[in-house]
Length: 137
Image (cartoon, rainbow, N blue to C red; front, top):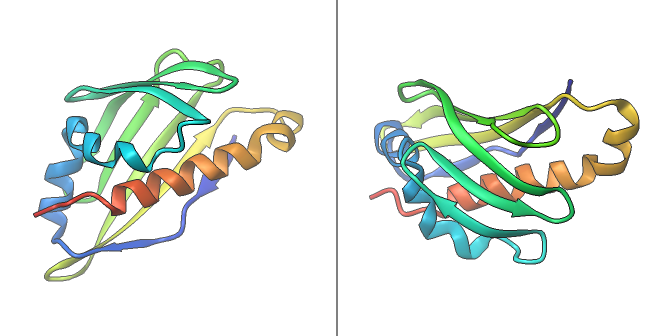
């Protein structure tokens, strides 16, 4: 299993606000403009899942499969050509700041990682950046 890690993003909101916002995927709609349209298209958000198309992979559905209040939101791929999941980790930095980082775990062979690993890393980095850009107030 290959792992891809984002850098840590600091959000100026407490972990309760951040977790509460991210627990409803419809709140990600406000970060939609940060997604590059040439790689990810047709994004739709629902309370506990989202759908999008990744060129050249195809349509992917992500659903919330696990939550640990104020610490973790785990998204699993329902119909992707590879088995993968994405973790959103939250850690309290201080009373009004939360550190966020994203990692993705993909069950891909080493040869495929060489071909698509850069795109997976780019996805993780852009996803973390988009999450950091949400208004959590």
